[in-house]
Image (spheres, rainbow, N blue to C red):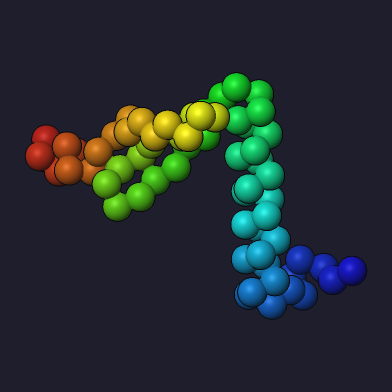
Length: 64
């Protein structure tokens, strides 16, 4: 088995993506939302697939 620092970029990205998917699945299985972000803002994804924004980047820019 390779050490983490011996992995190629593609191998490390695949490893981290798999760990993130697993953490999200465990979070949803426990009944908690996972937190994500996109170009619109920060949002929660619930176990039922519902997406709820907690922060919209547009709103923060308007406050300045």
